[in-house]
Image 1 (spheres, rainbow, N blue to C red):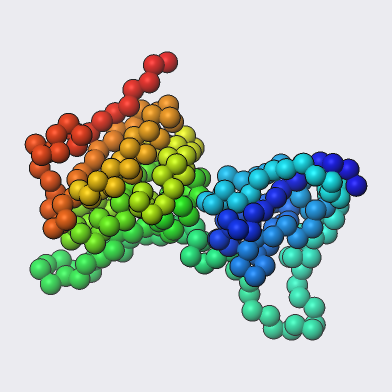
Image 2: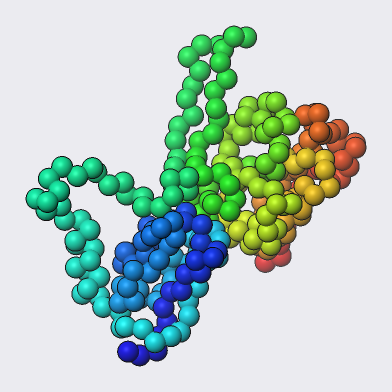
Length: 262
């Protein structure tokens, strides 16, 4: 065996979401006992296409002694995965394309239109994607392309009663809590989302509590770090569900576009 570059998965960090699996063209990673595992060294080419899709930063590229990458073995492995099962399993259940945690499967769907209108018309969810947690969304999710993005503090939908109609409608969304999560991860993840996709605008409703400002600052920093001119609007929500007046929030609440010299 020779020393070469190869994927390393930190099982302590891995949450079993499976976002790395569809991005490994060689099929070298599987979920085993709730954790992503490299099933054999010879299936890993060491290029790291899976790295940017791990929300926990559990995957790295290291150099160590490892069996050489075997392209022929990969071809056989992928072929076997597509084969019709043997007669030992005559009526297998169809396998879904996504092999990871169902809670992290990327979905995009149409928002249904209300059948009727009027005071008694049931509310319709305006959510058009899954997942929504900032830690779980892949940076290249299809719903980010040419999207108006809503970055929401995760307490806002509970406090603000018309969240779906006033904020979520027509937007892609990510939610998070800067007090409970790593704000540095938020900043880096948002920066990659802004760099990778054509985001048309960003709207950020946040709670009036001091810790919520961390999400605002992380988003501002990410837009600036992306080098793009993205209109950015912040809306401060009170604990009783009211939108705070612009006079109270001041210049902090005004729409802002980051300009970068060429």
